[in-house]
Image (cartoon, rainbow, N blue to C red; front, side, top):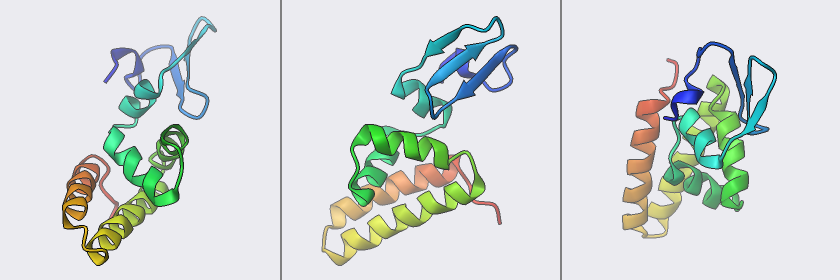
Length: 116
């Protein structure tokens, strides 16, 4: 994770939707997509699964997923989408793909646990 994005760092505010880091002196710095994903603890694989499921370009899916992980309800949505991708792959006989998505899903669940 980029140290300038650590939550609670004095004088910083992060806005994933606009990819801007606002510093206490009022200046703003554009962030890369990688910065946004790192801040949200997401991988490119997480984004690719959602991009494929929703038929979206990677960059658009990344912004959507970054927004979704900000809430418990959003994490549930991602959870369902990943489960759906696993089931689709299995139903289509794409067992290697199902196994890959299952590993992506397991990592996602470890970093974004659902509230029970």
